Length: 189
Figure (tube, helix red, strand yellow):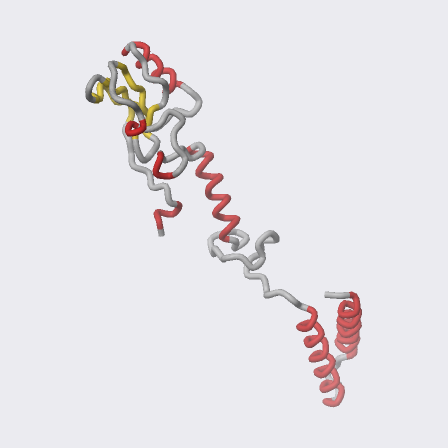
């Protein structure tokens, strides 16, 4: 809205205010028709000065964004961000899902590792697959102590396991219960 439109609209609304103060039960029809034409003129000025669509949400950041009826400000974009923050409070930040997601583990997944040697591999369940969570150990006791330390850490995984690698893989022990977690928000709806 430019300055000229703002001035004209302000004048029209002030005139309507004067009409409102002068209304009474004895107001003649001619005066009511004058009020109607002034009201129509104010509406026309208002529609000319509005250049954007009416807001669909009460969000100042996304006024015409998608609507989520359950959000306090009706904004789907902000509510999605708030839900992700609430999920991160309870679950911690999302772990990488492995090589298929493009963000691979620091230590890799089993298919990325070279041919087996005699060693013990500490692995954690990231919600989708088992991934190596530390360097392979030559000593089984050292690997178990490493997993025990990880479980006591500030952000332990849902499950850990120790895999013995020697010409083939053998799972020796599992801590926790691995549960498949859907990485798509709201169950892929």
